[in-house]
Length: 387
Image 1 (cartoon, helix red, strand yellow):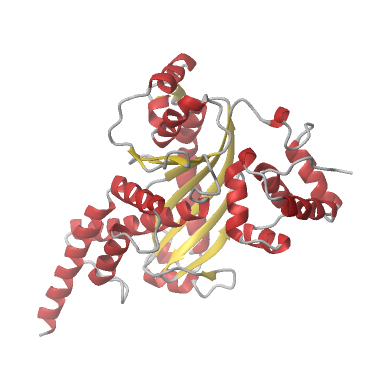
Image 2 (cartoon, helix red, strand yellow):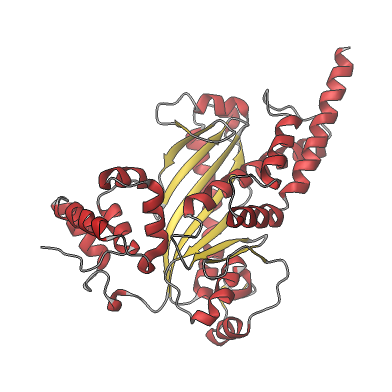
C-alpha cells in the first residue's frame, strides 16, 4: 500500500494531478476552499496541512484508482514523499506564460456561443474560458468581450541552474508564438477573415517553489528570475546559451545593479520583483503570501489591456479612426486605468505593492492614457460628422 509519512504542498499537488482534478474539483473532493489548496501547492515542501487534512489526504489516496496511485508513485519517485531525500538541489519553478492577441469583438461574440467556452466570474469584465491543448503544460484561453484573447500557459520546470531556465525561455519563445497562432486559428476556424489575428509577444511569470540557492541569496535569485536575460549569452551560435556557472554564482552572491526591477515582497513573507521582462514571486510564508491565482488574475488583465491598447495604437498609426465594440470606448479605458492604479479599501499591502509593480513596469498606464485620448477624439469626430 502506498503511504505518505507527512503530506506537504508538493505531495498534495502531485496527488491532484494523479487524480486528474482541477484545483476546484480537488478542493471539493477534500472539503476545503480553493484558496487553501492553492496555498498548499504554492508552499511546496514548506507547507504541511493541518492534522485533520493529513488524514483527509490519506483517505483520498487510499480511495484513488490503481491508475491514479500509479501516477502518484511515478511522480514522487522512489523516495518516500515528504522525506528530505526527495528534495532536489536545483530549482523547481512554476512557469506562467501570457500570450495575448486582439481578435476583434465579432470573433469574441462567436467564440462565446461555443459549447466548450464557459463564462468565468470577473469583478468588472465579461470573460469566457476554454481549455487549449499543449504538449508540455496546461493552457487556458481567456476570451474578453472587448475583443482580446489571452492564452495562459502553465508549465512545471526543474533546472539545476537559473541560467538553464533563462536559456529555455529564449528557446521556448521561438515555439510559443507560432503555437499560439495555430491555437487562435483553431478557435477562429469558422471565421476566415479573423485567421490573420496573431500574438505579438509572450510575457512570463515565474513562481519558484524549491530554491537551489542559499537563504542569503534568495532575493538575488528571484530578481534574476524577473530579468532572466542577464543569465543568457544571446550572441552564442546557433542559439543563446546559459552564462557560465561562475557568472551565475557571482550574480547570486554579489547581486547586480538593475534599477528597473521593482520589488514588491514583504519581509519574512515573500520576495517579489517585477520588470519589463517579467515577474517573479517566491512565497516564504505561503499562508500569509499572495496566491498564484491572485498573481495570475492580475497579469491576465494587464496583458489583455496592453493588447487592446496596442490595437488602438496600431489603427491610429495607420491613419484611421479606431472603431471598438460598444461599451469599450474611452470610458472603459478610463475605468480600467482607475481600477489598476487606485488602491481598494479591502486590499492588503501586498496586493497594492504587487499591482503597482506589475502595472508600472508593464508601461500600461501610459498606453491606457494614449488609447483613451485616441478613442475620445474619434468619438468626438464621429459626433460632429453626425451633426
